[in-house]
Figure 1: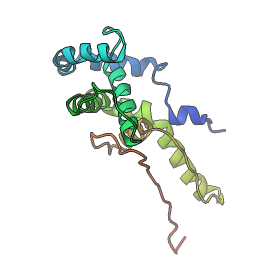
Figure 2 (figure 1 turned 45 degrees about the vertical axis):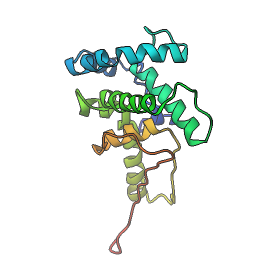
Figure 3 (figure 1 turned 180 degrees about the vertical axis):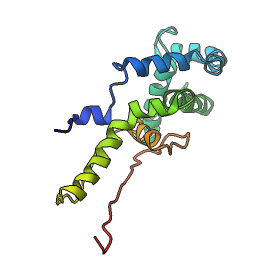
Length: 182
């Protein structure tokens, strides 16, 4: 019997509990290019700690990604941004977001990371296609709803991640066609 995965695991991979993925991220964080960027953004991160109330030693690139995501959502919904969220701050946060994503999906051991972060979802999609063919299931549509990070993970697993986060409310569609000769 095939292994079944919960939707939670498909759409939010357990990277925090996966020892191998954590090891790959540890290796990534110790790359000279990664460390150089951390040094470059040190002063900015200290300012952001003052603005956000986070302690500077707790504010990681991932934490800044979350800050940027929150501000981006506020801006998208025409909410007033804090006075410190200047265009320059938003641009730097965007640059950090792109870099942080690249650290998680590329930069080091990209194919192996892709299997951990997007492989289960891609496997489920391919399994559904196989079921359609082999078991002649009458499925018309399967839909998953998730966050941009899930789309990034799927793009990484497909080997098509562009290096830029997907736009707000983006989606991926997979269509399965049967040719006239069956």
